[in-house]
Picture (cartoon, rainbow, N blue to C red):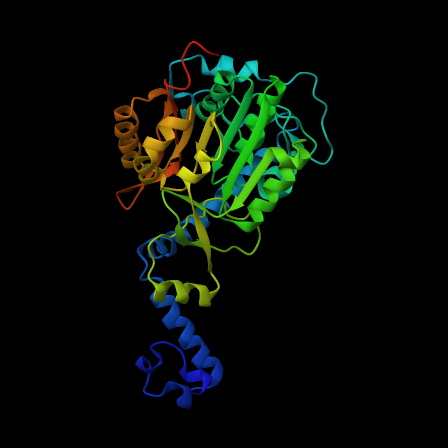
Length: 378
């Protein structure tokens, strides 16, 4: 068979299209067919339909970051008094917890941005935001900095305070190892033995995480990084490819695609197949998880509903990034029914687009498991 006739659905264009059109046009038709087939996956269709709006918003954020950096010569505090990031609920003094972990007498490193815990961050991870901050030392991020607010910082550090002797953190969707490094360094500063476990779908971001852990002094035996998708069970998922790591930090996996759809998106070169890594397998590989940090772009409620029984046996504290109000409600039901205690929470912030709510800033929930983390600690 002529290779030009091998495209699925080639005859829909005009009979035997490979004989009528030039080869490059046949290839374009084939790609169009594959793209149409890929867009039959609802999750891919949703991402494609919102792409232009998100790109526009991203461009605006980049310009705002450049403007901020050009007028700021000292440590960056990314929000002003009256910021919505002050609108959180907590059962403990969140700001006091953050201040208690501030590193003392830090010196700037010319190669890195150094945060207030002493964590070194390579600006190449998010160059359009961090490059102007190279060589700086950040202030305590109240109410927020370029990646997290009081609720997320305090929730993660609360887990460090509740740990004893050692500190094991599991970060799902770990990116450059943000919370592996932040809580790992904070735990080490407290004399706890750290163990860092990260799962990430983007291969470039996994390499960033390796580099970040090494830059912050973690030994190879203290770090486990896995390239895959965290899920309730094993299997295969599709994950978007990007040309350069650090360009997009909101990539989401696609579950449940048919064999035909999976082959189509792979041929287009826009997705790759990755193993789904069972969360039960991950938590059962250790005696205890002091912090489970979850930021998996909308799959958090399904994951917690499916795994809460196993998590309640092994996980002392979890901080969850939430991606809709509906997800937040489902998490409340799942966690409260399992006996967990909500210790800190800030709801997702949304804007409306064509009268439809769209999340602009992810929410945060911090939950303590009273079976493994009595509130008298910390």
